[in-house]
Image 1 (cartoon, helix red, strand yellow):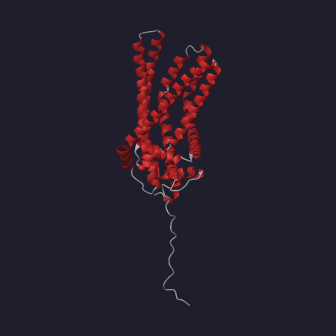
Image 2 (cartoon, one colour):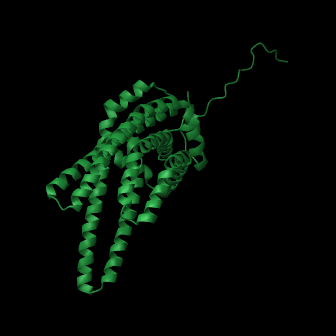
Image 3 (tube, rainbow, N blue to C red):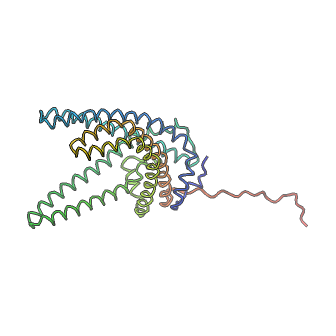
Length: 339
């Protein structure tokens, strides 16, 4: 059982690394089991969807080259994007479920209340998964709305500025500056949204309340949240690349050489077909890489985020750290003789 005084406190930078590692012995069995149950079957689904999607592409390319009926091209394109969309949808829901279970497991362990996997999965599936899906959809809609609005404003503003000032270069610079501002806004919002999922998992907040809770927790801590989260992401990505990249490269290296040879000998005419053949052949490898990458990422990142949420709650006086353990000493013996 985890000691609350270890995990329920304000964290320093070194604490995030140290306590994430210390948390793993308390949660690794449940985490590894749920991740295996989710992402190993999902890797086969990943393989199936990509295989079906890539099998449609040659016919789409041939139809487009021969200028056929537009409806036939659109039908095949809809099949291609249908498989990709189905893959994204199922992967997103499964990832939310796995992340929710591991986050809840981490919170339970941090508060000294370990729970069996059946209890964790039941709590997330019955009470929290729908809210997590709605939260993800809401945040996606916010991003899409901002991007579409920014594109429209940029295009109209650039055209108007170019027409009034007769200066295309200034219009282009204006558009570039506007897109840089858009990128900044999206980064700022993504940090502000960082702990909405944890608010649902730990505090059982409604969807809109979870967003406002995350905004309040990140307030006055934006740069700290941004910097530490970026650092942890880079470390996890580096770990994944060390483990997965050499294996994938070793398996696919001969085909890489064939692609280069095709490009050098035949120019770019045969390159699209060879690349399509290459990715179709190695879809199973991509599926295995996807499963391994997901297991490593979700074994570590949700644990870090859950502990970060606890840290922010303590800093905002929304969660009191437990009192230090009392040093119990025996009272003086009543049988002692007073001199």
